[in-house]
Structure formats: structure tokens, C-alpha cells
Image 1 (spheres, rainbow, N blue to C red):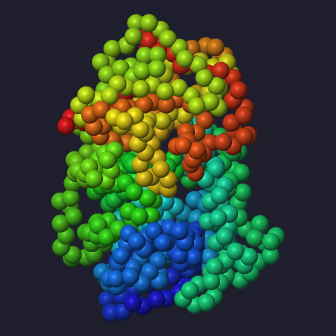
Image 2 (tube, one colour; image 1 turned 135 degrees about the horizontal axis):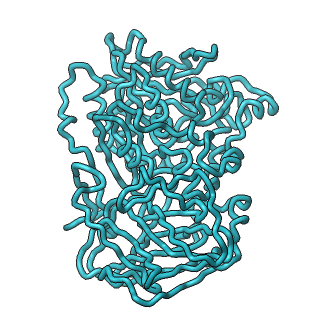
Image 3 (cartoon, rainbow, N blue to C red; image 1 turned 90 degrees about the horizontal axis):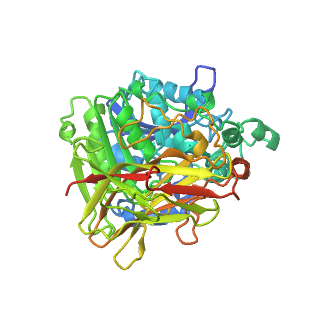
Length: 558
């Protein structure tokens, strides 16, 4: 293939962004697949993510045995050696202020997305381009796809956002109104500032050229002046205001064909976004694929690369015969506790599934009732926010039961404080009473999670559906101490088959749920956000009688 390094793409404000271009070594006009982001177009996968690289080599044998050396592989973007031979031009662009591109880093800002828009339009007019550009990538490279697609570049023909949040407030920074910045605090220096343009202290060396990957060295003061205070801004914007809205796409404006791929084991940053964008986009041609496994594994496995290329063949290649349009719109991995032996792939016509039967399980004391009958007796259970919380358990399932879709939890609560953070976890226990956890995008994960800061309980009635609540996050409605009120909690979508003898446990705490002694990466423990709500005062859950607390499960007939 032909490789053009550091190709300048002009921006409308007289700046420039640099790109690497990999294209077939043959005359012709080819479709483009592009990624535009902050992780360094010249940083080899193995140099930035050594441990993941070792895993990837084991699960992706093509790197060693079938024509791909892995030499050009970059984190969360396509492998040129797998795509260029299939008749594609691969373009990877350093976003403004990162890698070889000068400027100020301001993640997911309107300026960065405008640059992306202009890179798409530039690529669509080059003499090696057939005028059709597709976007593909994981996480950050998925999030910004939705943002730029909503601006409707004329040469954008299709997108494949893979495991990425679509809502800057609800997915990325605040879960149920609770600030989550533990991951971002590490992400900012480890994956952003390390790639800042001119950062000679932490730069990698381009394996292909031997040159620094972040351009000419800048002084410490110049580097500090060339990036926003993005992480601090998250705390300064506790509500879903203009700061978040300008970093959140109007999904209905996205009209190009879309293959949205999510992970049931995704952390708080992802999972919800892939499903939400699929449901609300304006695309006439859209597909949803929900998988399992690690964050990077699925994207590079041969079966998924084939899926990606089949999709782009249909919408990017001119006069290419394709059967993709016959593909059912929804592909789901139906999770089973005896993974991966009994998990299976199933194709559906819609999501959520039309045949869903909501099972309303009443909370009674510390149990979940199968008979859908509430207790006539009111009971209450209290806990301290930083304790292990309260468990509500079913009896063992008497028949195999599939739960796939959105889950809603209605609780009656009170607090000695004026606010209350609710962390909700759905857990699976086998017939030997052992907890079953699953390989997640980054770490072991339970069945499902949900969050709510009680002062954010106001509901968006337009976007809320039966069995699924959607929050406004426009204002804070503080609690009156000791007053009992109802709240609805969105538990992020999931898929799980319960074999006979297994139990479902609903755990409610006032802090992040830990698997064993592992707290996880997506935490909600920033003291200035958490401490004012009252972490040392008593919280209470009420059940039965007039305080009918209900867990609504989407059961799929087997």
C-alpha cells in the first residue's frame, strides 16, 4: 500500500490538522474510512497499550499469520493492512492540539468537531477518493462520530460507532446526576496530555520514521496554555447545561446509515450510548449489534471486521453488489452465566423486543417477589451510604428465564439529609450460591447497574417510555429530611438468561459497588461532588402497602 505521512488538511480558521493516509497501490478512486481523534495517529498500539497488545496478539492471529504485521495498528482504530487490500483508503487524523496537529486541545468541543467535518469534506474531494467517506472507531472515535454526523457533511456516507457514549452528560460525565471523573482523571494525562502537540517529555517515537510523534517541543507554559481545563469543567457544570449540550449530538439529525455496536459489559462511559443512538437517530438504514468481551477485543476479531467491511461495502463502494440490506436490524449476544458455552447470537427485528413481557417484581422487606403481589404490610430498611447497603433477593428460578432490554426500579425512599445517591446493582448467583460475574469492557462486571441522585429525579416525559425512565437533569429538587417520596431509577440495558436454580439479587448502596475488593475504573467518588449530599446520614427504603417499590424486568418468552 501507499503511505502518506503528515498530510496537511486545512481548517477554516487558517489552521491545519495532520493526517496519515494509507491507500491501495493501484490507480482508481476508493472509498475512505476515517478516524479523527486525540490518541496519536503515529503512536503504535504496542507502545501505548502494551498489556492490551499482548492480549490482542493472542485473539487476533492475523497479525502474525495472515498478512497483517500489526505495524500500522493504532489504539481503537482500524488496521490498514486489513482494510487497504479490500479496496479502502484509511485516514487517521490527529485532532487539534494532539500529535502532529498544532492548536489547543478541547475534547469533543464544537471546534474539534468542525475540524472533523472539514477533514471529511476534504477527503471526499481528493483524486484517489470516490467521494464517499465512512467513519469507524472505538470509544472516543465513536463518540465524535455521532457529533460530526449530526452536522451532516456532504461526503459522509456511513458510520460505525463502536462502544461509545452519545450523551456527554448522561453517558460520559454524570450518571443519574452523580459526577464520575475517576476514569477521566487518569485518562486526561495518560491518553490526552501524553499525546499533546509538542509534549517532548512523554512523546513516543514513530516506529516508521524514528521521529517524535508530537511535533516540535514546546515549553511547559506553552503546553499548559494549549489545552482547556476540561476535567475541572465537568465539576463546574453539575447540570445538563450548554457545556454538555454542545458536546452532545442531536441524534435526530443523523441521517447516514449507521451500524451501532455496543457491549453488554460496557462501563458507565459506554453501553447506553450505542442503544440510545440506534433508537433516536434519524437514519433510515440503521443496525444495532450488542456483543460481549473486552473493550478492544471485539473490534479486531475477524468476524467483526467482516461485519464492518460488509456494512461499508454496501454504503461506500459504488456499484458493489452487497447482501447487507438483508441483514436483520438487531444482532444480540444473549448472555448466559455459563459463558461462553451457552451464550448465543440471536437476530431480531427491533429493540426493545416487541414480545417483551414486563415482570413487575415487588420488593418485600429484603426479597423480590415472583408472584407479582405486593405485601400488604409496610416495611422499611435503613443503611448508611458508605456501607455495603441492602440486598433484595429472589428465590431460585424454577424455570429458565431470559431478561433482555431496559429495566426500571421504582423505590420509596427517605433520608436524614437533603439529598441521596442511589447506586443500584443487579447480581447473579448460581445454585451453589456463588456470585457470577462477567468479562466486561475493561474489568469484571455484574449483570447491570443504575444510578440516581435523588435531587435529579425529575423525568423527561417526552423521552420516557413504559419500563424505561429518562431524566431531565435541568435542576435540583432537594429532599425534605425524613419525607418519604417515590423515585424511578434507570438501570442500564442488559441481557441475561437465568438457568433453573439461579437467583437475582438487587443491591442498593450509597457508593460504587465493588466486585470483591476491586472498585473498578468508573467511580463516583470525587469529594467535592459527593460530600455535600450527606454521606454519614441514614437512608431508608420502604416496601409494601402504600409504598410499593417495584423492579420491572423485561422478560423474553423462551
